[in-house]
Length: 341
Image (cartoon, rainbow, N blue to C red; front, side):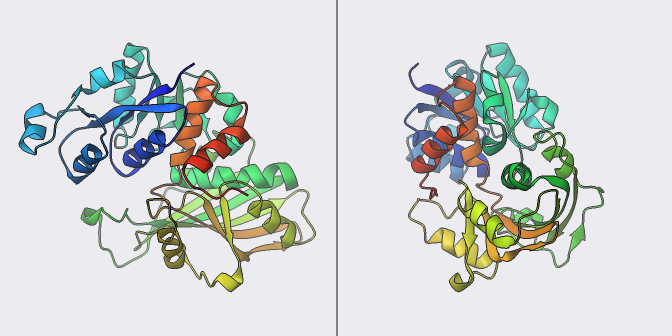
């Protein structure tokens, strides 16, 4: 088949990154982006040459008053697409799904929607082949993506008896000034947190228990993992080497002097890939320890970008554009300038 025609409905933190990523893929074509109202992000979309379609309660007059041309309605965008990547705010995707179904268009939803919004939850390292020929797929949230990637490494190599993770969450994305600042640590009183059950939509037999707290930062999330292994390695070296040799993981060595998330994001800003993003799971060599059957490790998750390559791989899986997950991941990572081991 020719290039898959992709529409991105919603052009916020995730949507604008997915749209950019689509344009970089050799086997995909961006139909346009859906936007409810004019904003600086809509201006950037126009500057990039993306066609803007009016979504939700938006009006052509509002966009015209801002000097922005529009190409039609979101329904017209949907009709012109082979697949819609829904990046609308949480809970709106489910309503949008009715439109996609009526139009006979495949759809990809984000982790802000409950898992039953789609036929399956997706992670490229874990279950790429299960998404073949699916009509609807849900790319899990940033934190669940990070945990699922890590489980894709740990489960097959050492087995897991139980997995406990404490998720230290950023309070808001950098642009969300309406959600802060706060001076405090806020526990999430949903016990366990929703992340563990969400991981089990990908690894049904994985015994996971997660808790979460919100802290006053906008940079990244951090996971504190304690995994009881069934076939533990002799030491942490094997774990370190396995993570380092797996796509979409970046492990910092002690000599790099990356103490925490500020240095990680400064590292990302120095990358020549157009955005200060870190799409990989970030680990520290010094933060990986094996003590008998127990594996401990820290990982940092960039909430703004980690799911972007997963959306691209989901498209390839749904349309059979790659022989297998490893092939798709390599294609995606090359296009997005993500270093590949």
